[in-house]
Amino acid sequence: QVQVLESGGGSVQPGGSLRLSCTTTGDVGVVNFMGWYRQIPGKERELVARLTMTGVTDYGDSVKGRFIISGDIAKKTVYLQMSDLKFEDTAVYYCSVVRPFEPRYWGQGTQVTVSP
Image (cartoon, rainbow, N blue to C red):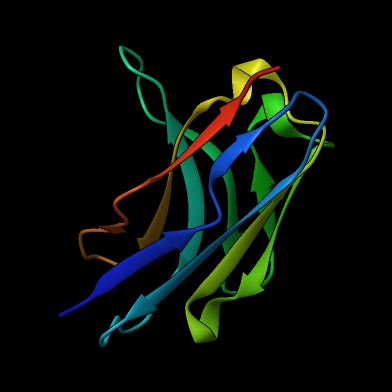
């Protein structure tokens, strides 16, 4: 059975940094890309960053220049280095594994809280 496992969330002061990690267990198969999304109560889940199997990265506008996604898609592992965190970055962060022509896998989410 496939599991998507996130770690690294927590509480940090504004301007601080956190690093999220995501890995998988089980036979995931071919992966197009892996990415990080976030969601706050009452709002839709939004893209934070994603990494394709060819190494292309894509970021949400609000995190460009502050967050960096890295990893190895072949190993089904991605990281999200978050710097200069702001209050509005507070959310539950989810890792997603996207496969061709198959439903994507989601992790359970990890809470990131930015507060004084």
